Amino acid sequence: MPSECERFWDSGSYAVVGRQRSKKAFPKITYQALKEQGKTVYPIDAGSGEVLGDKAYPDFATLPVPVEAAILEVPKEETAGWVAKAADAGVEQIWIHQMTDTPEALAEAEKRGLKVITGHCAVMYNKPGFSAHAPHRWIMKLVGKF
Image (cartoon, rainbow, N blue to C red; front, side, top):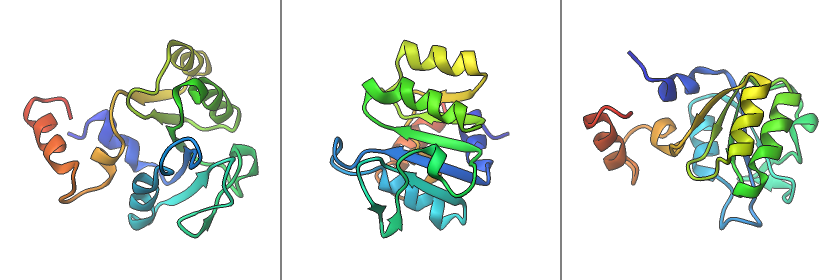
């Protein structure tokens, strides 16, 4: 039976929220993996015009269509704000990248009724096959935390 983390990737449409300017790179691995799986996925990056050659949107309100789920890979101090923006846009579930959740972000998600995954790296779940994350995936499965 798939775990909650595995079921997150069953949605049909996603927004990947990141900042190229504040991190070394936009969460391109997560974004690219979703594209490779044939998912409808949009990059949200208020500071950039494009991600991997695709138009980047500044926020949820400017997306061409609503999305079901969002992956938030933003600086910790921005997470609560993006949780609220996702809820306002009708997003049903969010993945807050490991070590970027805050009590305020989690409280906002609970208040808005969002399904939340946190404490895990999205790449470990959405990039199948061998990668740098494959050993982590194997260990997490072995100890029953996948």
